[in-house]
Image 1 (cartoon, one colour):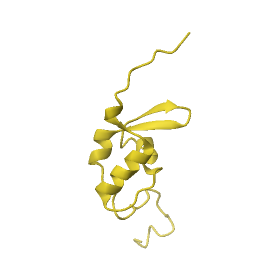
Image 2 (cartoon, rainbow, N blue to C red):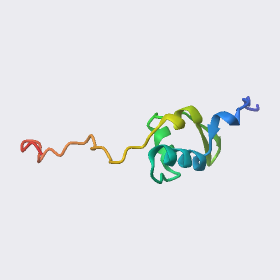
Image 3 (cartoon, rainbow, N blue to C red):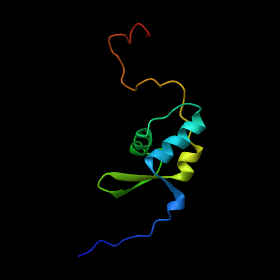
Length: 86
């Protein structure tokens, strides 16, 4: 039995390369083309698979996203330094 196909309006989606260019413009620095995949993985932007190795990223999500200049602190806590307050 064939899978049901849905029409996609490509005007509403970016490729990974297009998303990286837009994120770079938003953030004022170069963003790698793999970055949108990470955003989609953690639920920051919507994405759809278009094949075994391709995804599209929703423009409205990418257009408003700004990548910070510093990397945030990891959630894992170093228990050895916890008592020192470090």
